[in-house]
Length: 540
Image (cartoon, rainbow, N blue to C red; front, side, top):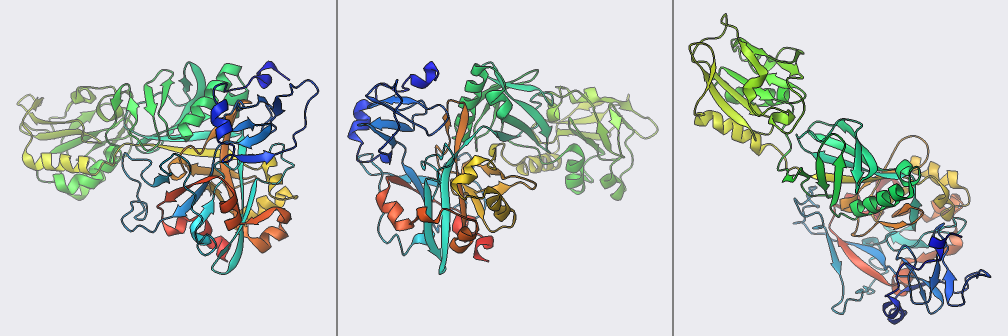
């Protein structure tokens, strides 16, 4: 056992833990004791670290404590209560802007202790859901899951198997809505100097990042693993995280918030690429312009050459563009990526124009240049030498540019947790793990994370992905192996659970769990179709 295993994490919480003895959950009153362990310590086997915890202190994860010689789970169990609120933005299928926690409202009593809701539990069991947040882990995984909760839905006996998984094979996929150039694809991303991920593909107005993963958690130095784990836990818990991209920008990313790129908060994502912008607004420009160039790092659009311009019978302007011509009116690589117009490195849009062909161009021609967000725009008129001269933009043209801005959605950072749950935690659900895997593929078992609907990837195993904004606050923890601790729930019919070889002897009624456990109730205003107990596969 390493020296770290023997060190208590918290030395100043003895009074708090002792006074809370009646509130925290007792896990096991008869813990095995090592010959070399002090009499005032107990060993925690909730993760591979095997902390030896002094009485009145918590372990390295801050989730388990020694309360008067009893190993005790400190965090409360989180229950979800569905709210039928027609004014809720979630009911309308949209996320509240700049308020990532709007859909989650915690109810605590005035003295700070959890406000337990015990009335009419049985009759409203379909409106109450036990999540894995605060449930505890099953390490070593021969143990049944901490909670197996039975309830009724429309007269059907249901069971939800609830646990917190210890995930080494996990990461966060971050979608950043921005036209800015963040860094080269495959570039390393660092947090506090340690490599914690990399830049992946750009997806139509958004840049994707991959953060965390087993190789950063366990494949590098101890510091890299520790920093990666801390970054992942903060990101999953909807906190702001600072990132540095090699050869690129400095970012501050927070789920549901606008990303901050090199100290500047992003405002909007683009309406589309340069070509798409031409197609969308061509009719509105027609008659007010002779040429429009929509500057874009990927696909710059030119109206008179574009199919939209041809359909409007616009004459060619004779404009000569830099870059590589694709199909008519579409140009690649007009400039290098950067922080300027349309995600390029230019500050003067005329840099991408090589001139005008006098066979088609004429003095007085009207040229609009704009970016894909409308953030940058300029109006020019050709002089006698066919040179673009800046001029005041007509109100009719400005109105269309304003329409571009109107059609750009707010720039946000979206954080999705991706984890492989096809390992040993399945033993906490059934004696035959592959039956659980197969039941998920067959839509017999519904998977959620903290009550939030999880997407299960195709192929082998149980690879789940979930939006952290839809999960309760502080859903993620960690253990110093290092690994992430995250909630996961498996819900199915009780008779299906029996056929899967489930641990039926551990199933407890919902009202018994609610009345016996220290919990906090989280009001969750969501669409009815997303409620974990209202999934079609489970209702047959």
